[in-house]
Length: 219
Image 1 (cartoon, rainbow, N blue to C red):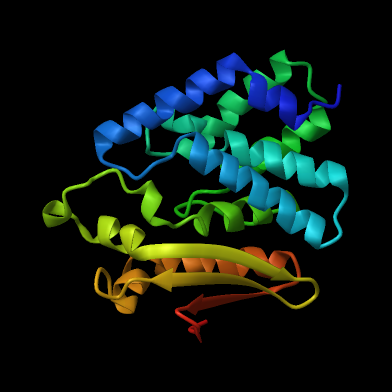
Image 2 (image 1 turned 120 degrees about the horizontal axis):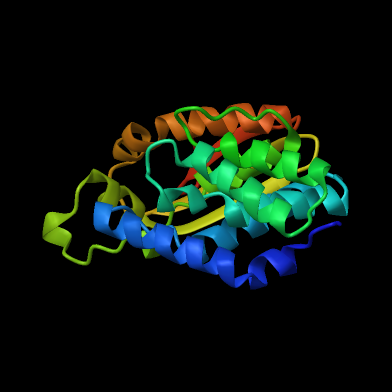
């Protein structure tokens, strides 16, 4: 059976795992990883592949992977990509999904976290790019500015974030940063590994990765 994104999105089981996973991350002090994050990641991953001319089905698989990619946090933040992939396998298998589709989805999920990530296929590459470019002030839960750590400052400083894809050329992450809240160098200190991973993922899709902050191209 060709599982659809709507079936995934409407699953009460999956909603529960996403919600409970985010509750764990709240306790650990992480930024928002709930429905806003996974919905945005799912949409961007889909849009990237559609813009590049991949099939509707490949784009939908990236969308599904994006929606499911963080459920492993319900077990533990450590190795959440791998535990999430195993969870997704069981969920999708129980829903009667096609094995080829399951394999593609869980491969992408298992390869999205910086510590072990690699863009092994286009769906995985799209997921990496969608996930690592979701930086915005609305993900910061801590409202006490005096207690902000560098992660809070970096995320909170990003007032606008967009991903632009130019087929056959480049993928550009455009950020508008409040430099009173966070210096550009602070952004690099926190997100350098993510940007390197984004470059590898973009290359998998035949693109160059570019980072533009406040109108200035930095990568």
